[in-house]
Length: 253
Length: 257
Image (tube, rainbow over all chains, first blue to last red; front, side):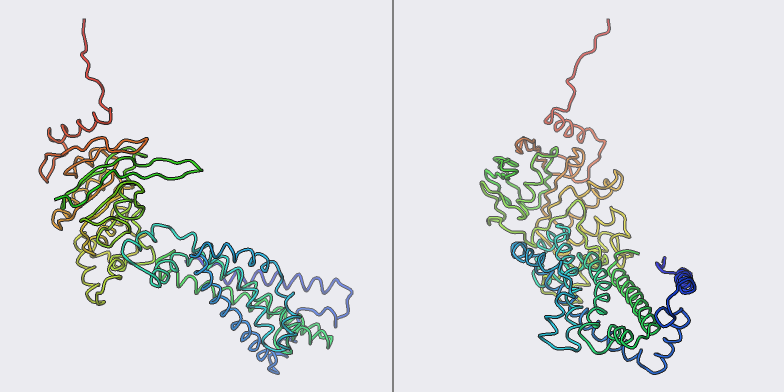
């Protein structure tokens, strides 16, 4: 099996990134407090690990992220499977979806904060919105692309709903649905930070705002790196899960 | 007694605002246990007729009755085998054969046992845990045949089932299908555009012509069940069908002066 990210590639790539950062640090005129070096950021990271704030904030953020993302994926796949089959209903739903889809989830933020106050809910809702539309639309398209011969065979053997959906349509559409789910995890993770910067008093996004308020650019940059790293891990974990399912269903090698 | 009765059956489609006749005035009766080949070039309506009999797209003129009942929907009693097999790629061979049995009231053990029996019948027991993509085209079509026979249908419809296979595999499967169907006493309706295949398999060949699709002639094949592709009788029947399609060169006398 070919791994998409080999350990060697990851190390070299990150080393190059850090070298560029170091070079910029050495050649710029900003004060150290505003533009810290990689080493200072690393020390800030160790400091956060030491006093437990990092672990707490990662925990809070992951809880919000998983709640929003998982519920969004379940809702969107379920609705998508239905709407993919009911073409004429989708004709009426689609314009509304196309109207809502281009709105940045952050645009909903002030409204959500007004309704629910500051806390977990705004971040969860924003992640839900961010993941919902890509998954919904890819599921609808996937259901429509199901090879009609599978439906003919099912009809011939008298396979009816809900068996038809679960045994035939969902597995047949799965590779394309997985594509949407995969795209959505990146988008949702991006919007987690936005959500927490505006609507929360905890989590990784809030930690960035907090670091700015205390003029701790080292903490700020360390947090940014942590966010990137978790995003990378989430993506890799999802890829692994996808492969497992596809393999179990006899899809690709 | 006629088992399948087709009376004045016709089918039209509307395509780009224009009406298009796919099938016109078909009259045909088929007896139980017969092996019928629908033979003709593309566009002659042979698949349209098959789909109408199988209930996927009923005719809009005339009537098609099976065992005295008008055909309106597909039924598990009349199973269709398709050219591209229609196997579910996320299921193993075993699970694909079990698929047809899932709508029947059977226990898990009975389902498994029945599937195993038919997988053995088509000679694929050692591949029961393989996925379709791991099998050759001929083997995949055997799985489809096992899946169809497993539900014990009265009629098996076959829509150019061997069209995607190479010539040698095709001949092997023709022998297999003949033997299986005689043993299981099924009525077979088999669509093909291969004249030899039709003569080799059928009790009667329904010769169809296009524009609009209709039945030109029904040719009895007075050969016994185990046929020889090179025998004189075989070639005689084949020639008769060649003539019907105007494919035979006019005999002419060559003069040597």
